[in-house]
Length: 375
Image (tube, rainbow, N blue to C red; front, side):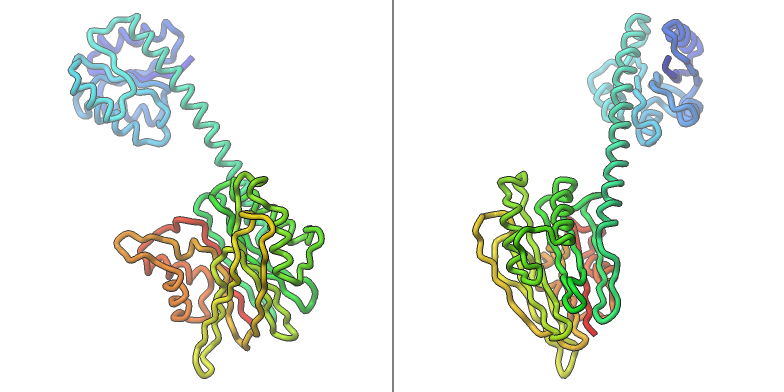
């Protein structure tokens, strides 16, 4: 049995339709005008509405418009009852949101057939809505799992703050930082091609492999060795055509030396405080992204970390914005912003400044930003 609402200012039509549908076993509610019908629709959430076009207070088109705008009635099938049979009238009704039409005078057999067809479509819509809600709930659980894997802020001799903003519920960015031993700190950020679940799964796999140091025959103190191990393991031909960029660094706190390597990733930015003048270094080594080709050679570089230096590691989503009405935001623009901002600003404030400078409410791509400060 389905709940059906009939809205018509003609009591005879109401009675005829009510009896015909009750005979089919449906629960039938009736309303004598559009305003009353809209209230009953909101209160009872019927599976199907049969509504006359011409009525006082609110006509059928306005009732249809408001019903379709109500998220609680999004799957309700709307059948417009009318004596207007012109093509322009039907186009207007369909554009307003009507799902079907029933002509006056009413033919009972046609009424019952259109109601059966409408209820079948309503059930399909309900099933799709249920599946959508289940999928969204599962994606939310997956997103919570990914967030739980990301490391908490780090304090002490090295302070690390981080922010991850996926373009969807799930994204392909991932990062981590941890001490290999009391003197060596690992820090990295990777960006898997694409978005959503297909990009999130390989990023989680890489994080777990690096965190557990499970790549075979890899010296995790040597960035170029890590990148080679990843490239050997994650060839895109065996990873559903997915590849990823990565920046990987190892910091020796005793020597204040950072060894780093990158594969197709934006440079990390090291900013030295003004003593006597501010310096900016772009830390990157040339190489293809991980997975594109086998037997790629990876190299590393070293630099000395100055006292009170700040290192920023980020994904390309932070500067690939294409803002409407503004010039294209570039890597150089973002680095220039980093040099101009208060060095005490955290990742959230930095990303908010990027959005304000470009008049964008959301980022087009996944965004990750690490801010690493050295005492």
